[in-house]
Image 1 (cartoon, rainbow, N blue to C red):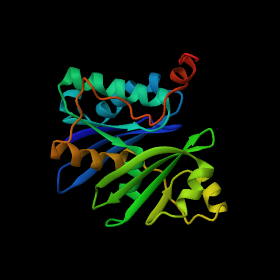
Image 2 (tube, rainbow, N blue to C red):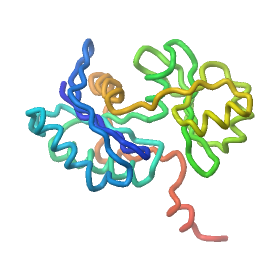
Image 3 (cartoon, helix red, strand yellow):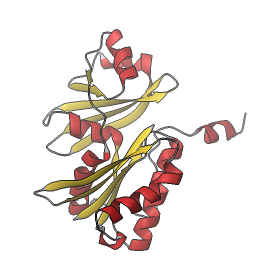
Image 4 (spheres, one colour):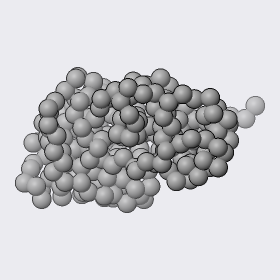
Length: 226
């Protein structure tokens, strides 16, 4: 199975051209994407990856995209682009939460894992999972004030992980036992997506949407005042 895995959720994104099945996985090429250039660079980078590796877009068997949480604009560009490709090429789509990805790629199988990401504005995105081998069963995903989460985290059982240095510094200073981990890129998102595609865990192209976890500024500030 040849797939394209795409992450435009953060300040720095990536695309991976991968090939694999239930028993083996190979990253053909990983390409970085700079934040702020997603709308201009996403499609050209996809085309370049395929051309340089002697593939046609019709050779792609499926797509995997990070659906959130993260940058509102980045997530919207990434999902809209992939939905368009899936619709035109009649290919399946699997979505992966970045919180889920951190729990799978950096957490220990058989443990309760809490992944934490910087949400800005003094807040954090939190995902609680039961981690397995290459999979993670979600308990809940939510957003919290960082200071409030620091108090809540003192009662949590299991691993606490973050790839964000600002989150790590704040929580460690608050006396929370948390592990700083490397960010998860598209080459590690790929095998998660292949597992979902092979299992039939695919998104409905017509209805799938971004997993913002919180509302955008446009929604907040356009709400009628009472």
